[in-house]
Length: 405
Ligand SMILES: Cc1cc2nc3c(=O)[nH]c(=O)nc-3n(C[C@H](O)[C@H](O)[C@H](O)COP(=O)(O)O)c2cc1C
Image (cartoon, rainbow, N blue to C red; front, side, top):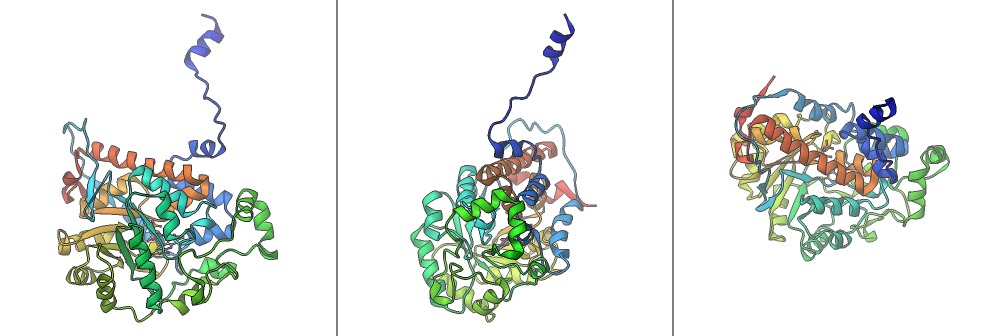
């Protein structure tokens, strides 16, 4: 055999990928890679709004770091040829214990915004949560997603507005309400303070250079309808369509700082499905959520965007599960970056995990295809880690499987 033939027989040339988003995704092996691509493609202010946390960003970081403090105690020779990754969350069977957390302003990452994420979530069979601060409406999202959807509630001082949104969610077959309880006032996100960041982002003189350096994003932004808070009527002082708002001023004037357990009762009285409290951070409050008759809690510090030095979420899972497991579903929200993180959280007692930033990075990196790529990465990683740990189904994920380093 001549040299050329030998070379041909061992080297298979990779096919050229014509689709640019797919070309980018080929190089994205994990969430960090998607984050890097998003950072390159999005204007600095937009990326920092998504990526940042409150104050010194210690909680944002410790959410992620917490998972690295756990090791597996893998069992072997267990016949893992047939692994069942499915589980039940809020009474619904889902293909793996993962949900998508609500995030506001999806359209700043990509013009399709919440619609792209909702479609990808349905394809993956995972619950999608729409934020009150979403930039696609309750009805629009329902049109593209007939799967499991949840609606996240922020409590405006004007309860009529809240009630109206809840009725719209009911009419559109959203299955659960997530009441966010960690946002009495907005956390101080200092990256946004430094940049004078507003929503929607202003393309002004100060940001024109940033815009010009990110032409893909800028064209997408300018070619599409103005970004608005699609679920909040303008009667209450701005839906973002005419004026850009400073988020902390807006939220601090509209949200009700008087929110209390009585409002949890009120919300249950106007909704017949499950109510989940998002932002529980102590065993004591987890117990109160059970007493209040809630179906679920999301252990969450809002991705470290509210109170800095709030506890690392994965470290809360075991103590909370010891107190309330079996009485209420427990969702571990914050810092989940791999399928193996879901294995760790479920082993410690969580019913499921949920993710925020990972899908926003994916959306900024490659649009809807990016979110498909990300959800596949989580599903594949969850199943592989189960096999490597010798677990054949979710019931076999127990505290025996992990230990704190
Ligand atoms: C850009 C961004 C916007 C968010 N908007 C909301 C929101 O509107 N309502 C809400 O309850 N949580 C919101 N969150 C918090 C997420 O629901 C979730 O708790 C958090 O992102 C989980 O942490 P992770 O980003 O490490 O996965 C937001 C988070 C991010 C990053």
